[in-house]
Image 1 (cartoon, chains in turn purple, blue):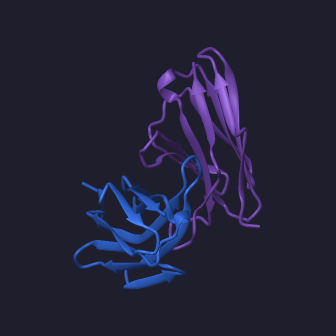
Image 2 (tube, each protein chain N blue to C red):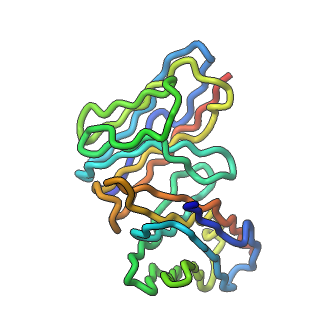
Length: 114
Length: 114
C-alpha cells in the first residue's frame, strides 16, 4: 500500500469556522508533511513531523495548527482563516531524513475560504 | 540564495514526440534531486530521485540526468503520450541545521496534443 489518503476532498468554510483536514498513511513512514499549493504554483512547505514531533514550522500563521496523534495520522486544524488561505492542501509522507527516499503525496484537499 | 529554476514554463508538443525539460539549481549543500509529475488538482507523483553521484536515472519513458558540477538536471520524455500532459516539478533537497528541506521549482506545464 503506497497510498496517502486525505479527507475531505473539498472544503468550503467561512472565516469564523473551525475545521480540520485529515491525512493518513499506512506505509510505516515516520515523517509527514503539510504543503499549501496555490494555482499554477509549486507546493510550499508548511510543517514537517518527524517521529510524531514537529520538526519544521515554516513560519506558518497560528490560524493553522498541525497535530500528529500517531505515526499514521496527521491533522491540520483550521481557525479564523482568510480568503487568501484558499488553496490545495497536500499531505505527504516519507521515511525521515530527506535522503533519497520517495516522498508520497496525497490527492489534496481543495479549500475555499469565503 | 537557494533556488530551483525550471524551463520552459510551458510546452506544447504532439503525441509521439520527445521533449526535454530543464532544471537549474543553486541549492547548497545538495542532498538529492527529484522530479515529480503533477496532474491538475492532484498530488505530485515521484518519477525519479538522484543523489550527487548519479548521472542518469530512468523510469519507463522518463529519463532524468544530473550534472552536479554545473548544477543542472534534465527530464527527457520519450514518445510522449496524451497522459503525459501535466506539470513537472523539480525539487532539490538540502541538509541544513540538522534537518532536510525541499526546495521546489516553479514547474513546467506540458501539454501533449493528439
